[in-house]
Amino acid sequence: MEKTLVIIKPDGIERGLMGEIISRYENKGFKITDCKMIKADREILEKHYAEHREKSFYGELISYMTRGKVLVMIIEGNNVIEIIRKMHGKTNPLDAEMGTIRGDFANSATENVVHASDSKESAEREISIWFS
Ligand SMILES: Nc1nc2c(ncn2[C@@H]2O[C@H](COP(=O)(O)OP(=O)(O)OP(=O)(O)O)[C@@H](O)[C@H]2O)c(=O)[nH]1
Ligand SMILES: [Mg+2]
Image 1 (cartoon, rainbow, N blue to C red):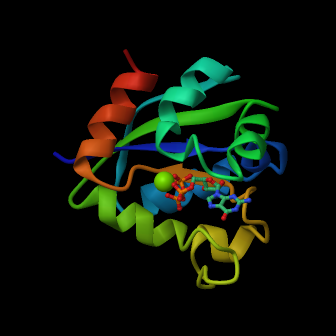
Image 2 (cartoon, rainbow, N blue to C red):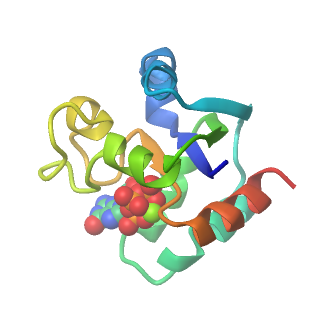
């Protein structure tokens, strides 16, 4: 069964959106097979977001992701990687369609509530970073 790595980011936890978001994955028929709520440190986030190290928003991204707890989950199901990316919506809040998690709950380029792996390779890499 295909697996993906999903994170509810600090703004999602602070705003009390965990239940709403988890329900969407479960209602879609996906299974949460592992999860943990942690305050992520800089070291793990530098690994997770290594591809963005040179970007202008990197510093802001790391301070946002370390400011509070995150809920990290492994979710399994048919085509779960691509379907959850669709359920999250586009990164830019102006492009995120209504009905997606970002479309419904985010208005900021940085604070966009959720993360999900974008390919099988990313999912394997991210699961080994967060659950090793
Ligand atoms: N301020 C700002 N933040 C950005 C921008 N692009 C990306 N980010 C932040 O960096 C995260 C990672 O960027 P990407 O991997 O390109 O976007 P994504 O795959 O839709 O989001 P993730 O599922 O979190 O990886 C985003 O979710 C945002 O939190 C940007 O142009 N400006
Ligand atoms: Mg990404």
